[in-house]
Image 1 (spheres, helix red, strand yellow):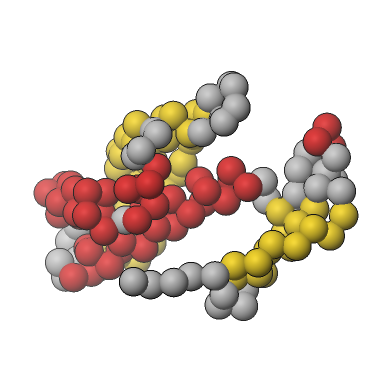
Image 2 (cartoon, helix red, strand yellow):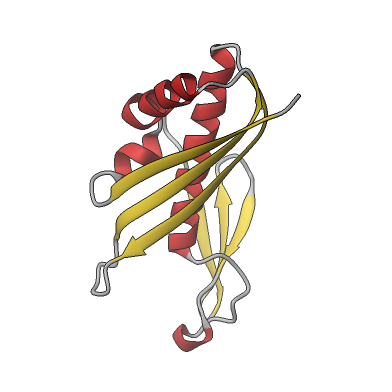
Length: 142
């Protein structure tokens, strides 16, 4: 079993300093109406970013193992959350923009199937409360 650690420390009002076990840091803050000063990410933004990075990491790895030349990759995410607490994500759309050479519709669809269904841990967790919808666009380069 893999163990990961993190520490969050209140700095002021709603501003938190987060430190991962790897030593990387980030600031998490709330909006002014919640006592924050908008000096950092919102916690739920980080969850959305985590999903995007997890899916992107796995997608690029899978496509490269298929010997596809990926030169750029972006994922645009839009999440819908419950209005009432707990305000979990209920729907998330991920638009994958894949740039490279030799990338086919079939290879992207297979990679999406593997990433979402088997490898992406964030996708597995999100799918407990949210409907995930993946779309994609392939941009070929010469």
